Length: 373
Image (cartoon, rainbow, N blue to C red):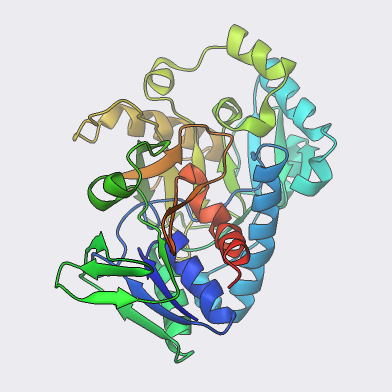
């Protein structure tokens, strides 16, 4: 079988990977010289802990298994089973963490409520004050800026993979074929469009009522911390944004403990992970209303820096980079991804939202299964 994959972000790359793994030939088309969207502008977290029970958690757990296997075969991914800690400081935050650790599927997520001393034994860099911390052992991390490149090198070594960059696909031509902006037609036995947050143009023509929206976020990265940060770190505001934490305790948190004004205005949570060079990737904000602002605002960064410093008990290293990113999210946020046959032999796969890095290996595996690759 010959498979045409359009889009070289992590979702597209994983579709190419599964096709090659199953013995097929792949032509992979990317409009940029390299993918430059949300697949790079993220934390690199394989974030199992906050996923909704059911399909979402099942997808994340399967993806976590696949990522670990990939990490063994492609060490350059930088896969590490680092887990995460969410320190809590108030009784309302503690109640949410206790409710999460009592869930029936808590063992699947690796939830365990730790005392401050136990948390510091896991992550000694957390020298600030907190009452307890929710430990999620199943969370992991990879290096987002290099993961697709590492996977592509492995794909090229197969001899069944061709990467075509700087080509924008403009048309679907008949069945199982697309035409790029150079006028070349690429045909196969299946076409998979993994266009990320590029939802206009051809995607709008193929699926005018696409139930997917775009979300903008701001993030930053620091100079090396100078010491290990063994786990990813979140703050209690993350409870408000991840479905696994929905409970009576969360309702009471939302009703009785407001977010800081800046965090509320920008729909913020803290997520933080250490990169292989020792720097910290820190975020994030959520902007849903279109058109998006084009400014990168300073207030959210100041808020995040203050939260991080309060957990670390020390000044944040110099901020090296700031950026904004946009990802595609199903408007029904309970859906893991939007997968649609838009023409004979042509499928559109988009909208995993902030779950793209986490869930992409399992999303692509499901596509391959459903298409009988």
